[in-house]
Image 1 (spheres, rainbow, N blue to C red):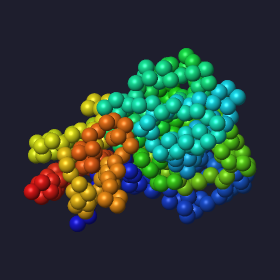
Image 2 (image 1 turned 120 degrees about the horizontal axis):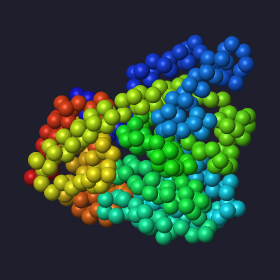
Image 3 (image 1 turned 90 degrees about the vertical axis):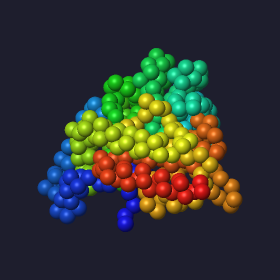
Image 4 (image 1 turned 90 degrees about the horizontal axis):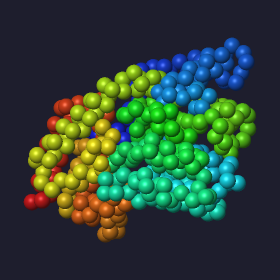
Amino acid sequence: MKPIYLDYNATTPVDPQVADVMIPFLKQKFGNPSSSHWFGIMPSKAVINAREQVAKLINCKPEEIIFTSGGTESNNYALRGYAFANRHKGNHIITSAIEHPAIIEVCKYLEKHNFKVTYLPVDKNGLVSVKSVERAITEDTILISIMHANNEVGTIQPITEIAKIANEKGICLHTDAAQSLGKIPVNVTKLNVDLLSIAGHKIYAPKGIGVLYVKQGIKLEKLMLGAKQENDCRAGTENILEIVGLGKACEIARQNLSKNYEHMKKMRDRLWNGLINKIPDVRLNGHPEKRLPNTLNVSFLNMNEYFQLSLFLEIAASAGAACHSNSTSFSYVLEAMNVPVEYAMGTIRFSTGRMTTKNEIDNAIKIITDIYNKQIR
């Protein structure tokens, strides 16, 4: 039997409606959008339309949308592009200890190029303190990058409050919204951010497409040199096929946001309630309330790699710990949250999606419970 899929934070299946709008650009509408002749007209219009669809979802101007190859590229461009274009203003960057590697690794890279980075701690729920952000600011601070919601535990960060401080100090604010888009409202005007990253494959679009929102007036160093595509920021012929798919995915997400939120939350809570009723000493990781509606990160006391291996044969989810050469390492996010080792070793992230059913959840509860009981015997 095919495993139950509860790993929507890792990636989502392509929505059938998204696939349908992509097919013509794979077959008939193959023209270069930069071409002025007939074959370039439809692809050019498709890019314009997709840009508008993305802009409507996050409430920005279409010209503030830069298409990229995904969330990692968007994060790289946001940090590197802004840092190098504005290093004359200062060389200090603030981020958190639980950011995605696409932020952490870029910060490490920038440190090798004479930038200073402050990695803020989080509390036991994975929440960044607004006061800690304010205290970390110096005269040389030019950029703050705090994710909108954590990919592992789902904790939603106080971006609006951080934005108020950043705005008062004249500091650029970037947020990685790869996990939050399509699950909770992501409105760049209300969030008051200057840069925002999007990953298409997290919202039922194909892999290999993303967006960087760049507020008008924000200066970035060019990502790619060449022609003048993407507001003269990212040269190269546009990936029409996937841009069209992302546009449609954003349109669907905007139309069904409330409905999808309620469904994912209902499935997540059904799973959690089933687990706490059947398994003792199960621990919830992440903020109990300020959390993505689909994310359930739980730790099972004194479980080992065999528990995870057995589980993953029947349920697709993500592990919070890994064993290497008789030693166990666990997520730096859990470590930053001070999750006890005896719990962290048995951590699983379950994430529900639009396609998740009650039957899948009920079957998952039974599978997890049975495997747990076998392990403790």
